[in-house]
Length: 212
Image 1: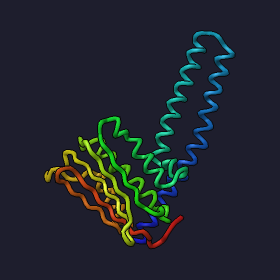
Image 2: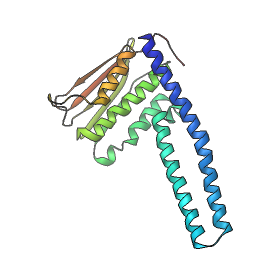
Image 3: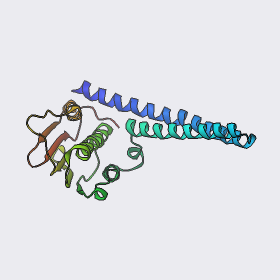
Image 4: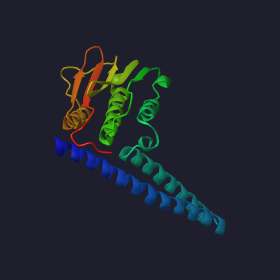
């Protein structure tokens, strides 16, 4: 278990390093390309040059957009900029449930965030994956989220009133991956599907090796 935790922590460190490199190197180069395209437009008024400069600028814009999406997947910037409470609320708001006619209730009941960065990232990624499943597959009109602590356990519960998962359906790779990650940290993930879907995750508040 200690090895599994170490691997998860190493994975997050690698994601952080890659995100920083993408942001610094590609971001600077994209800016330079856009500046050069503007210089070309100023230096020449031929239709071919103006069209080429416009295409270059548009390609740079697309690369910038794709890079931002990769950065969000590698390491959500809100986790560096906001508290866990604020970051999770920001994540929930990104799914725009209200605008889609879905009632969403989120109860954040932690007196203090976990000291372990590994736990913080795990909670964020778990909620992200669970809400993604609700958004894509549940066909729900109500979603309920609870994050609380009971003694030495963190509890994340996501429940919806959607179509649920039939006994013939096997949980997808997303659920399996979450379960493996939770088990590696000494926790437990349970899935109930009756009158909707309910996922309960319990994680220890203190890992064997606490990382900051």
